[in-house]
Length: 133
View 1 (cartoon, helix red, strand yellow):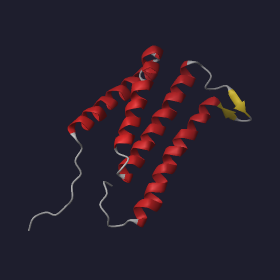
View 2 (spheres, helix red, strand yellow):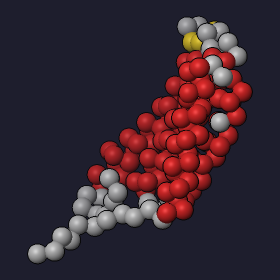
View 3 (tube, helix red, strand yellow):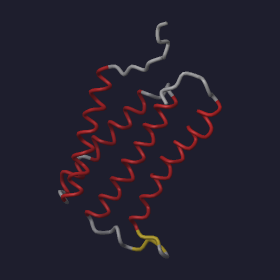
View 4 (cartoon, helix red, strand yellow):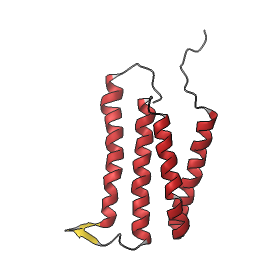
């Protein structure tokens, strides 16, 4: 009996963009680790732009869109945190016991909220339907 499992294919031009995205992301994070400010900051733009483009291109598949939007917010949080450390304002107090580095949690939480929506509401309400996850 033939396997009737559905498959999900990514066009090669999209896959190439995703692979390039990983290169930019790694360069950004390596630069952060090694404190190479110019390269690290210059990698924010291509990393974030490609993540946004990928999100736009996958907007018709809710699973892909939600995961890619979570990545956009992860990169945003990560980039803010990196810049805060590079320019040494990460430990400055915003108010009370909150420091500037703590503000990175906002986009992290937005990304988690998008994934929570997907897994707890959207995916659950459409059990058995075609999906990538």
